[in-house]
Image 1 (cartoon, rainbow, N blue to C red):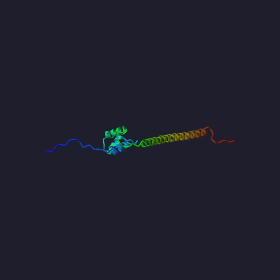
Image 2: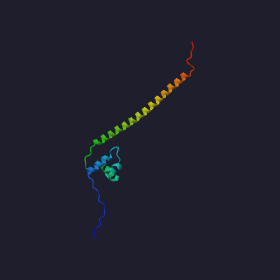
Image 3: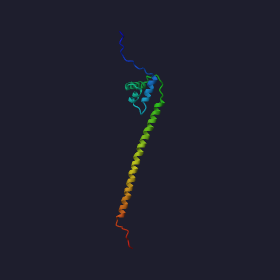
Image 4: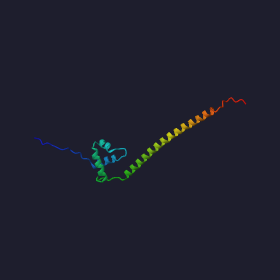
Length: 123
C-alpha cells in the first residue's frame, strides 16, 4: 500500500526576487494587492517581505539613493498635479470674468440706447 503524502509543497523564493517584489510594491502608483496579484503570491506574504525588508533581514545591499529619488519624483508629480488643478481653476475664473465683462458691456449698450435719445434731433 502506497504511503499517503500530506502537506503542501511550499514555493521558495530567492532573496533577489523578494527584494524586487518589495521595491516594486513601494512604487507610488502600485498597491500591495496589485503587485501580489501580478506575481501570483498572497498579499500577506508580500506584506511580510516588506516588513522583513524594513527590518533589514534581507542580506542584500539596499541603495539609499533610490527612495530619495522616488520621493522627489512623487513630490514633483504632486506639484505638477497641483499646478494643473490651479491652472484649470484660473481658466474657469477667467471664463467667468470674460462672460461678466460681456454682460456689463451689453447692459451699458441697452442703457445708452434706452436713455431717450432717438437720434431725431432737429437743431
